[in-house]
Length: 389
Image (cartoon, rainbow, N blue to C red; front, side, top):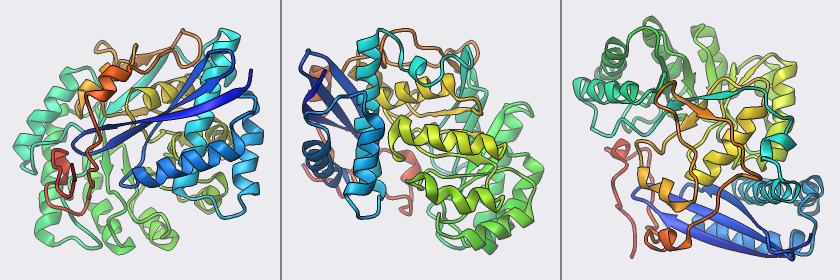
């Protein structure tokens, strides 16, 4: 089995573009991959075309370690977000092909079935502005849907600092959600790397009485010293890693004890090959994994396969029940969170277990949207501001 071609398809939504890759082989198989590239889809497409031609066409899809080595070493330049995402998409598609060729689900290639159910938490649900009562009502709907955990960024468009009034508002929002969902539902507080270390530490102290499940990315990814301030200010677990794109870049976070929950993104850290290596490191340090997942159905399916086999899994993120739920129709068999227990089932079909519906994709053309987390109202995820036709 040799790879003969690589095709890409981009689907647009009001706040994200989903890029799908299909890797074709000489025996007629098609392997799927996907990523959501934040605001750089054109750059991603160019990188896929260039690296596929150089390192993938003509190769055996089973040789994923060789592909990762070539992209990491033969390219010489440092691997960043775009390159790591390209590698991830191709790696995921290759694993899909491997599973199809062997007649087994991808998770059988990753270590088998570690768990029978994959717990999920909801994101993308808080689309009604920043009124505590309104957000609390939306949170009730999340729990009614079966989720046992939900994530929220209550900080609006804040950057670096937070005024006293805005801090009170954020605390009121999280408090209203806690009052609504009760003490047993997990509330993950997303901070999107917005703050200085001092501000994040202050926020952490204020949030502690509300028992958040974790504080996510309290400072920018490069601010290790700021993260140390947050660590000293609270015993609430710290989660981070979605904007860390190679395994070695986690070294300082892990070795200095600055992260409790590793949130590397399967589609931004080299795919299964990269994330499996990081999972072994996390296990050595007794840390948990909660993969960042802002993908549509293909990327989510890949995450479910990884989560099925990963020994240190805590929970898996999921957007697609609340933000763009129509994306399930882009494939033949989208993964579904069961309302009975807020979890995904273990996949059973060979490979990833789904195929792309090209007609459905055609109905949702590119939006060229600029998703801006420092723009007022970003949380509505409904704006095409800055888009072009």
